[in-house]
Image (cartoon, rainbow, N blue to C red):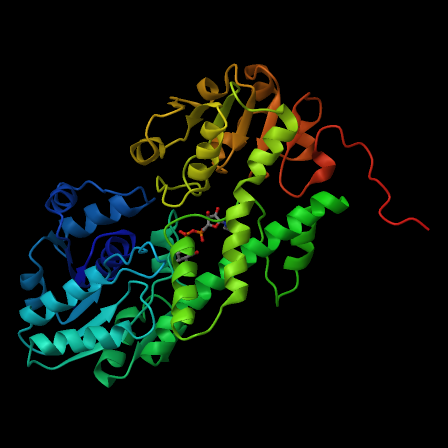
Length: 445
Ligand code: UDX
């Protein structure tokens, strides 16, 4: 099939490349000239395992092109996939201006029947809006569809080539037929539904996963009070198939380009319909507060943080990505700087992105993990990079001036900490906290 993919962010670029890998002719379009030039040189603007190799092989076989010329890409294609960004407005609502602009430009460029499928996460009703915009620009026939994307950063290629399911929301029979055919090589789980339900499936899925994370984080906070171990609790819960074991890792809360934005957007969507989504509002509140547990534990360990040196390992919102969008590191480092601490930060690949957004004020960016930890009064681990897991706690102890370790991602086991003098705090595992030798009785007769 001949495809144009509008937008070369995570979703557009990875989808376009994977569709070309399946043997389709794909033209990826972006209005950013520098980005297109970079992609045409074989370079990749995002860090995503496996993507560079796939781009190189599909480009060399002539199935994959990059251009800024949207009208030409539309004219040459049968299916047009919209994958432009929908960032949050200050109100929390999704900003649809890129979507609307893409729809107008597609409409103007039409030269025959087209299928226009949206992969961007968009509020319920947006695809109908897209339909109206395109119809206002052209007399050619077309059908619209919502095909939400569920890929995760860091495993985006794998997720796209082996999805759990594909959701196709459309009222057009031709769109249903061709989009099913396009996605058929990826999975047998192709769900066909109406447009509004497809749009809602994406928000509901992300909101549910965010809720799972906030739920286990609150359970972790209670575990710290009652002397239970949240990793054991999550394992025991996860064996129940109705619950499932994934997304039950307690930590410092979720970040990234999707969960924070999509939870806010769904709260807004509900609010516009006079529905108060109380549960999701709490999910968001719990997530914000969870980040500050790092600060609370540091203060419990060090007292006043003014003048103290605090090392930070991990700036990306999760491992295997250089993406720092809504990373917990922003608020945690900001709180440290406001308290007068000197911060030394290190991330294997996200430092440049973080530095560009956060700036230099109060933070020294380090070239490796050891440099950050040397002579610090405490170390906080904010991202569970494998590189950090491979460092022995005894090395950390030898680097720090005072051996305070706040492990925000539970990367170390009790066994690994044995024989160290580290003053250790993790999340929801009070039995591993320094100085806790035996549990207090909870009930007295
Ligand atoms: C997410 C969804 O998983 C994906 O389906 C959607 O398309 C986009 O949003 P992504 O943001 O790439 O993907 O990352 P994900 O792996 O889901 O993690 C999101 C955040 O949740 C990270 O900050 C991660 O650290 C956190 N998380 C995840 C936890 O704190 N605990 C968990 O158990 C799982």
